[in-house]
Image (cartoon, rainbow, N blue to C red; front, side, top):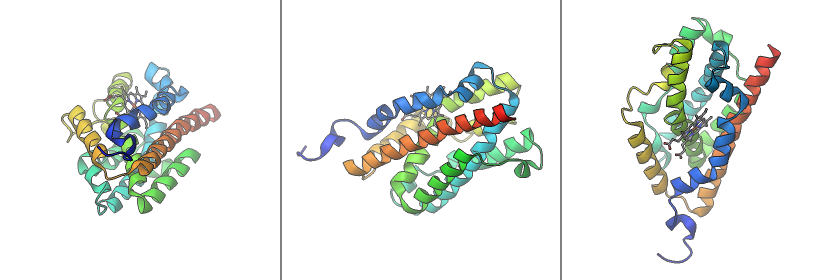
Length: 221
Ligand code: HEM
């Protein structure tokens, strides 16, 4: 190893990223709206309100992914096996009805979140990967547990929780390990890695603030 290569040779980037975002993950995980859903204090309406916001987020994320398929760095993270938008549409059709699209609105944080995804999705591969990582690796981690919990609580079989069912990913652990190897192999210098970590922290903040919005919308209803 030569000097001047920074921390990158000592600690894998994916490990640094997980460690540096641990506190932000914890805030998101323990936010009131999510904690209520997990502990069984959330209602079916609360769950549906969350699914609706997910639809807007994944519409933005997956439109950005379509654009980023042509980028040599970002494209290695993109696969149809992750695509969530059709499952979210089917969930909403089941949960809300055929006119679901006319009956959902993005909350203020969701509007800011999707604006940011569109912005980095058009201009910055590392920023796009930060948002891709924050959502999909979360979906393949805590998300799997949340899906099972919601199914049990609200009596769903597969309709209504399709978002949490990755039919084409038989081994989420192996998928995540491979994803982390791709993060470690991305040709980012230390400064770019810092920027990517900052963007992951921003993505967590959007998710936490969205839970706050959802709690507020519920209180106002
Ligand atoms: C109640 C809510 C949540 C629970 C119970 C939960 C639980 C977990 C658990 C147990 C892991 C570790 C899995 C592993 O090591 O393979 C994990 C990882 C992760 N979660 Fe969550 N999570 C929650 C909410 C969230 C939210 C809201 C986000 C952001 C949108 C998120 C994003 C992530 C990410 C990106 C990882 C992967 C970290 C890495 O290995 O690099 N999680 N989650």
